[in-house]
Length: 140
Image 1: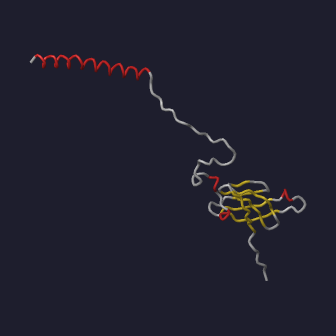
Image 2 (image 1 turned 120 degrees about the horizontal axis):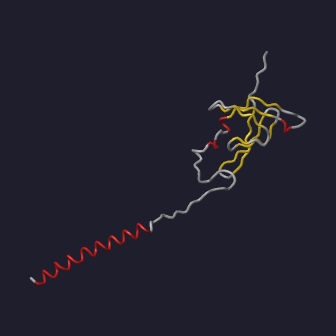
Image 3 (image 1 turned 180 degrees about the vertical axis):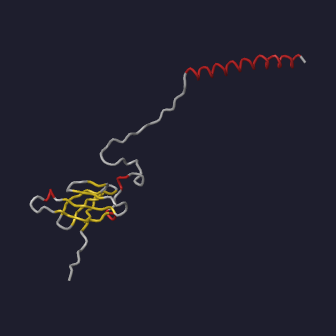
């Protein structure tokens, strides 16, 4: 019986000590709040952010297949003053471009009397595409 009372006294003494120790630990945590450190990356390079989805950004549009060349005002003496009018067939937007202008991923490389040459930048590669005026049928 004496052993049981000693054990009971030990438990009665140990519980408040454990509670005090837990309370001191929570006070220590409250005094020193934990913070989560994360690595943050900010892309400030030239061109498109490689971490942005191509499907969500507007710089994918318009595609060359969405554009229709409607007018070319060609200056034979000063080709740099030539202007082309393009229409986006998906949203009816009109683009007035000169040599060097950029629309999305399309850069106007050259304007000729009946066509516009674009440099298309896709996935780190460049290719040339030409958009021509529709053939006009002569009246008999």
